[in-house]
Length: 141
Image (tube, rainbow, N blue to C red; front, side, top):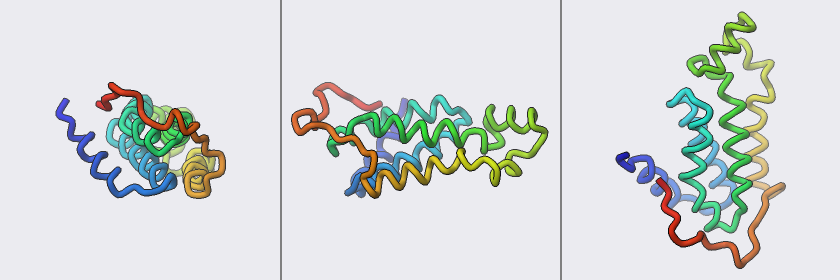
């Protein structure tokens, strides 16, 4: 592993100043990984590992991270025609994946709700002050 993704994420994290920006970065990274790998499972694992320490440093419970990557990675996969979920949906329903977009509101509404939660603070779980530092020995990727 070259660690290139870690370098890119670390540069991105230097510009992040708020919870909303961190959630937005998580959303963007999850979408990018889903599109690039065509695999929803990797879209859950890679961003979760890359952002875990950042969530802890900002005093956020990691269930926020889990919810965000699930909201984005799992439900948007069927909208991408080159993923296995997209191929399955298109072949089963005999409708182009992009023709499903207006009707698959749940698939993209979750992204908007994740962003609303992040920028308003509604539904964001915070850690108690004692648990806000990342445990020693955590080494993301």
